[in-house]
Image 1 (cartoon, rainbow, N blue to C red):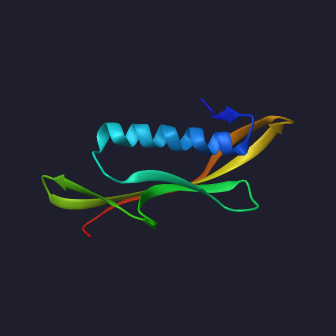
Image 2 (image 1 turned 60 degrees about the vertical axis):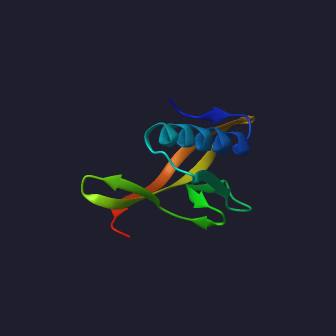
Image 3 (image 1 turned 180 degrees about the vertical axis):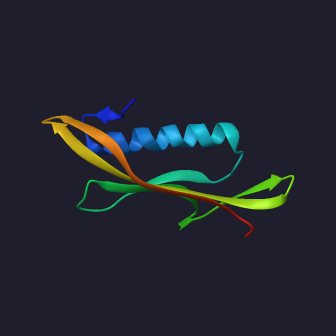
Length: 98
């Protein structure tokens, strides 16, 4: 189901909240999911943050400690005069040793 709201900010916030809840349910972490809007555009990036740095989340697995990275490039598209729809333009994820 698409995310549709009255403002671009509401779209980005709803997406960030959804991603944060989903990840909190499966990955215990002190990191938080932040949505950074690119000034003057209808684009934003969601990623894990610790303080002021985008970061990975450490996971202890049966294969040892791995680090999980996730980011999404989002764009808001105006469908009607007061209706905006969120689109995922690109996403990145990876598991790495460090």
